[in-house]
Amino acid sequence: MKGSVQWDRLSAAQSERYGRLCGALLARAHSQSPVGAFVAGYLGRGTVFDEAVARWSAAYADRTEQDWRALCDKGP
Image 1 (cartoon, helix red, strand yellow):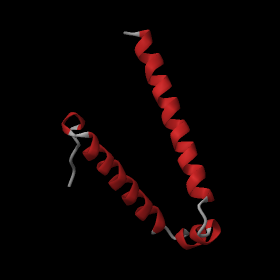
Image 2 (cartoon, helix red, strand yellow):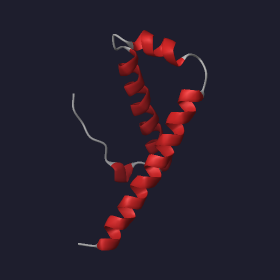
Image 3 (tube, one colour):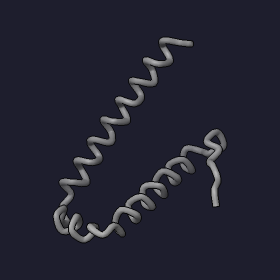
Image 4 (cartoon, helix red, strand yellow):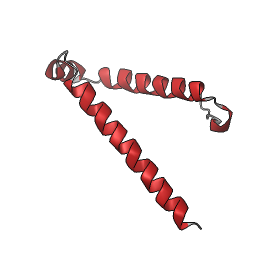
């Protein structure tokens, strides 16, 4: 089944839930890879990796917003 999301119809809360769902599905898909147990063992139970990914993601989002603003400033 194929579909698309009409972003202009989502509330902020719905958009956040959709993002969380996509992240959960992606994590599940990766955890089912043949090396999932190896990766889980390597990362352990600490939060160091989680925090590093969260910091990187926030920085990447900031950079994406900067790029978008620069693109908008240039105009057509």
